[in-house]
Image 1 (cartoon, rainbow, N blue to C red):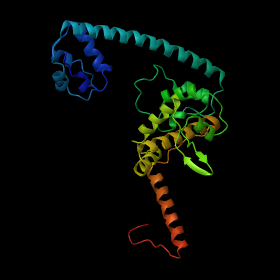
Image 2 (cartoon, rainbow, N blue to C red; image 1 turned 90 degrees about the horizontal axis):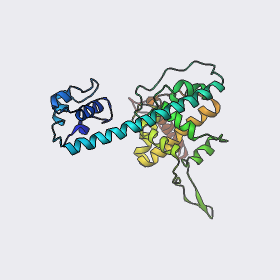
Image 3 (cartoon, rainbow, N blue to C red; image 1 turned 45 degrees about the vertical axis):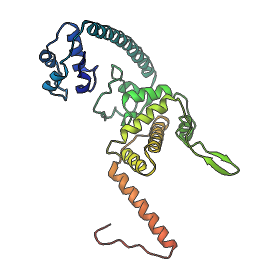
Image 4 (tube, helix red, strand yellow; image 1 turned 120 degrees about the vertical axis):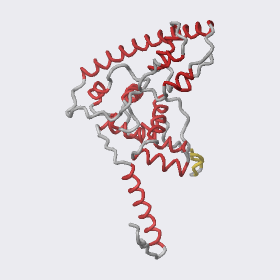
Length: 284
């Protein structure tokens, strides 16, 4: 139909996109009327949306859109049934678990994931696990649910856990010489989720974000994603196994610690050559 709605709306299955597409199926063709269905939270202006809805509404194309929306509604109904079953299962597990000693911390995430379940899963997971895993940056309620369901075994240590995730080096040694230390390829779904979380946390002003950016500048983004995903996995393991809480020290704290380590190394190297380093004026 030569409509450009997908270029002006971030998610075509969102509030704005679904209202407009259902109105088209019901027979509305006026771009001005369709643009008024725009949700108030949509970033594109009404004029921009109106310009994107000038098209050629051929009957066969409208029929194809109607069929596609019908299938979409069927799949959404099945997803609702799955969410209801997940909620029922979590309620049973939460009833068997002992209540945590501390109250549920304040929710850190501001935005709800578009593919998350249609109920508040965070209180149930907090009661089952005894800790709020969403306090770890990069991990939201939906990701916690997926990680808990995927990583069910009780691993002896964090090293065993990250090795199972294929996020630790796989050293190939022959004759006492390391031939390769690359991580193994894996189809583990938990690993894929952690890698996506690492990419997302790399854009935040947090200690994990600063860690990712510094590694990406030094060894490349691919290796930085793996290293950050491994760090998130260790935080997840420590929270699940030992109930350790996570408090983000901030990107500035991480940068300061990194600067102190570099200065300490420089002093040690200078001492090996019989030299002494002295800070210049204006530096500390």
